[in-house]
Image (cartoon, rainbow, N blue to C red; front, side, top):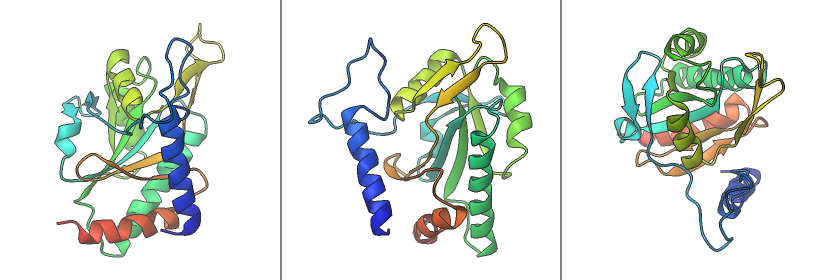
Length: 202
């Protein structure tokens, strides 16, 4: 990992520890700096194929997770396309993707039902799994992964937007945080981080 990425990762951990990455709401107190806040945790959601899945289903594999929503006008499709290009590049290099599961978890469960998720994920890498669920299930996931998400614009109509943290999270086979990729990172940056991990995976 290069020095800039080491510093970026350290910043992410620090922000998480301070509770700033979560953008705590007024009724939620941010943890004290001395209380580390882990990134990741259990979830139970519904796949774009209509099957109930939990974090335990991915034990033993890396998870590449992006939180977003299908009605996102620009950022989400851009980041999912970047994820797709990185995975395609790994495949071209002969790196097996059996040890990694790319996931797209919606932050907009009211509009992103199973059918909508299925249509959307079909536009990206074939191994990408879309996950939705009830608002409560989604909140459990966003809380666990310290992802901020809040409706904005005309929330009284179906044309609202959702402001949300935009980063691709990489979790290890035990569900522990490994690294993250912001909008500044390229597919090549992702490949450089993931290549040695996947090659070493059993």
